[in-house]
Length: 610
Image (cartoon, rainbow, N blue to C red; front, side, top):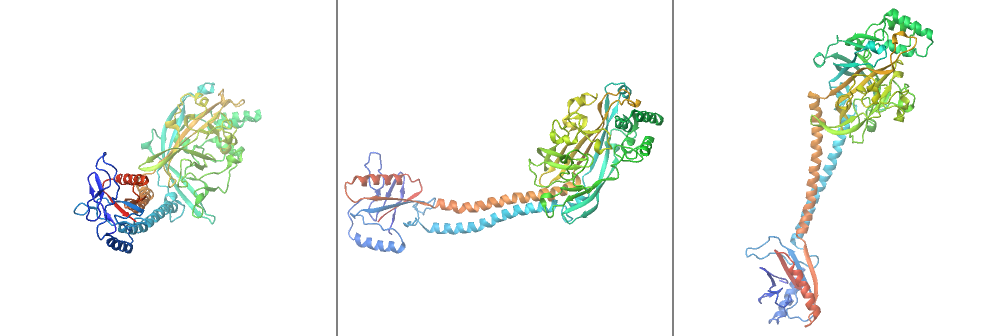
């Protein structure tokens, strides 16, 4: 053959030429003089014809020519170091093919290229499948959360399967007579009185502008087993009708005030009343209502009975028109109109009158920690915004918790955008008189939590704390569906003595809490299992499957690269001169010898001379 292969000996490498002895490539010991990789021994008889025949064979097979051992012309030495791994024949010698001068290409490289092509053809479809799964997963979510009869969440939106509970806490007045004498009010919290809340949508109408209109009806059923008390319990509370009417008469002529005082006395009305929980909640007959409706017909919006929650039971919360997300997904669940209005007229600025966000039941999917929850509340007559607090889990389902910001009920001096809700008192309470028949009612967190401390200090028996009195919503961020919620609000009445109306006595100005309530709900039972399977488990399987396919595709791409690196040959080219005594020859041969010496164990050395 044109190339002679050197076998490996421990600690020594050599090149064997023909039948002659092996010529060492490096000295046997540090004291030995440098030895050339190829010695110039006299040519044996018949060497020239053999060289010609070997050269012809080499040219036919594309292999480098090996010059005669005794040649005197300058030649190019080409040494190839091929990593052979563990490929050995039975005698322990390395079996390989001599590399060609055009890139050391052998049979292994050809088969490696075929493997690379096969792996490439396998990996590209896998990567494409990964991208397709990612898109399919997103499209599946979009299809299942929009308001459409074919979507998975439509029935959940139509008939809310979450059991909602309304828990009522009353502030029982301990010292009503002392308050009339000008002393500080003292209250005692009573409750909770728990009601099961049932909701269902009716008059569902799909419109041509990608919206749907509906009415949502609510009804309440008392739950004695969950309550601390009965509806027959008596509670001492401010007489809202008397004290609210007195506040409305503050700037009226004295003659009207005296007439009202006389009317109150005739009807037996007092500043404080003792009524049952059921009467306070759902209404009671009062002759004052008939009198006011007779002479001041537009003063109160209700007829007959008066109760704090009478308007909520067996009634709807107004006609909502929201976007379905079928044509424009970016507007899904957003309120288009409420009772035909795109903004309300209760407040003193356009920003405060805007109807923002959703109807408070579902939100757009694919939330991030930067997402905020906006919704319109008919009971509060305004839009509210909740902010992200933390991530968590609910029954194995990942959730984002949203809470009320400290500025939700801040007054205009603390938070200028709320100036439209004024006239304001201390920060932390919102005046809702303009949407509640002009009665001096205020909305806040329970026990004046997150409000000016002056408010809680003015009433004995209040103990605000975050754990018991803050509100939150836990929402599944991928679908925008609430998993667990607890909305807590307090209703208070601003009272004070009105000159000319004797029933108000010497009451000092104070915002007196009436009641605080918690509206809570958590998904459970079969709806929770269905939600987990369809909208959490299956998407999770697809989510991880796409990464498995991505990893498999990357592995198939790396296989030919690794194979190419392992089979790569390092070729070293160096010139040598045939002139005896040349210092350049000794230096270059010493350098080439060092290159060969650095080859690790298991390396095959090949040498050829052109």
